[in-house]
Amino acid sequence: MSRENTDPLNFIQKIINQDNKSGKYNKRVHTRFPPEPNGYLHIGHAKSICLNFGIAEKYNGKCNLRFDDTNPLKEEKEYVNSIIEDVKWLGFDWEDRKYYASDYFEKLYTYALQLISKGKAYVCDLSPEEMRNQRGTLKHPGKASPFRNRSIDENIGLFKGMRAGKFKDSEKTLRARIDMSHSNINMRDPVMYRVLNAPHHRTGNDWCIYPMYDWAHGLEDSIEKITHSICTLEFEDHRLLYEWYLNALELYQPQQIEFARLNLSYTIMSKRKLKFLVDNQFVDGWDDPRMPTISGLRRRGYTKNAVRNFAEEVGITKRDSIIDAVRLENALRSDLNKRAPRAFAVIDPIKVVITNFPDIEFETLQATNNPEKPSEGKRDILITKEIYIERSDFIENPPKKFFRLGLEREVRLRFAYFIKCHSVLKNKDGEIKEIHCTYDPQTKGGSAPDGRKVKGTIHWVSVDHSINAEIRLYDRLFNKVNPNEGGDYIKNINQNSFKVYKNAKLELSLKSPHNKVYQFERNGYFIQDSKYSKSNRLIFNRAVSLRDSWAKILANKNK
Ligand code: ATP
Ligand code: MG
Image (cartoon, rainbow, N blue to C red; front, side, top):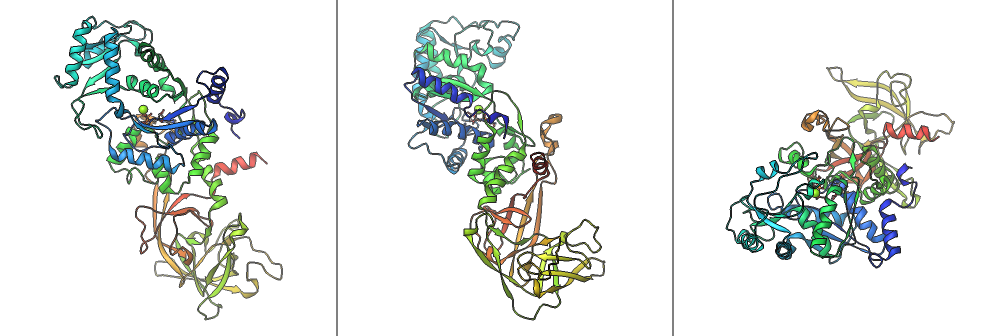
């Protein structure tokens, strides 16, 4: 178990417990998940969703879903819809509390007028570049804007003019009047509104000024009477400003609490970078099974339980760290091991002829559906004289430690019989076309009455009673622990992250697979591809292999 989890309460729960004790919010717990709809959600967002909705559940409180849609240039309805789908898929319910920052535009505008009336905000004519140059540095104070001392009336007139569309983009801003020499640079007269003549996906052309994140966010939390506003560490330095706005307007104050964002090895989490991969077709859309997006994980075969268990297991900290991607894969393995029905699929087939098998149509055998759940019973599988096995399960002259099939070697066909190989048939290039074996009819079900043992057990399907499918195997999208290493994540894309097997053979029971994840014995966990698979052209994605070397090392350590 990870170190973060030895204390059953994380630091956020401790803060909430204290607040409940002191009566700060009358024992109310109300959180929110506030995505900006400028991309699809990723596993980092999943962690935030699980945290915010999870806290609300634990304390019998509430959690809102709020779209922070203050930047019309980057936001789209498609992203809103995908976010709704993803949060629902994770199993969380915002009930009737789905909000949009854009619903508050009028209210925010009124608050801005109030701030101007208090002499705490002013309209500034500096260009973005001039403003940057006057901002100062950590060591040096900033310089006051020449427009800082405009009268309240003039500011109100100009701000109304901004709203009325009298100015061009970036011609004017509304700035808070705080302190140009404040040690926290965020407090040096930050911009509250900018002129931006762009339509918004919800408010259309109603607005040509848009609120900045820091101004809008705290007010949104306050309007919704959020108690604990949980965000990631990079907002720690913004908390002072968040509180300043609410104090200046004498409004209800939520408590902002920061935690470390989730970073995963071999994974990028920036929506901007993920969008670049999508826009430039490095991947097959936001839901490409190699993407760390929730929709990508879903298409890959991840379950909501696996994602939620992973979020819980990695815990909440104040320190930035990189979580090993294997922990996410292991969360999936342990969920699927319990629930996934087993099936036979031969990914890269080679034909085996059982020369002494009777010339009958087929023989019916019994296979266990899930050894972890005996109650799920058994299914029929059909064996015939000709079967397929994995090409990799045969070596003509195998080394000693190869326990699968080879010349004069005997193996068990799972749930069937022992077979022994006597010869191979090759084409003129010397490539093996067929493997010829005999079977021992005494070994039905997989054991020999004379007590002789075989070291290997392999899976198989009947040639006549199997179906064709395409199987897609995935590897990590990046080949560096930190994909940003060297400064260009595109250079670190793993060129071998996607492999297609077009001639896979599946057992008959997979003819009409449901949308569930199967364990294809010995090959891993697979799900039908939700985007391209059709009844006449089945396509399966591998969610994850059965084991990885990391797991083996850990298992040995724990022995
Ligand atoms: P990105 O940098 O990927 O674009 P973001 O922070 O800009 O992410 P938002 O839509 O603003 O994306 O995020 C919504 C919520 O999810 C925020 O509260 C944010 O703190 C949280 N969040 C985003 N990324 C992570 C992460 N990697 N780990 C935990 N929480 C995250
Ligand atoms: Mg953000």
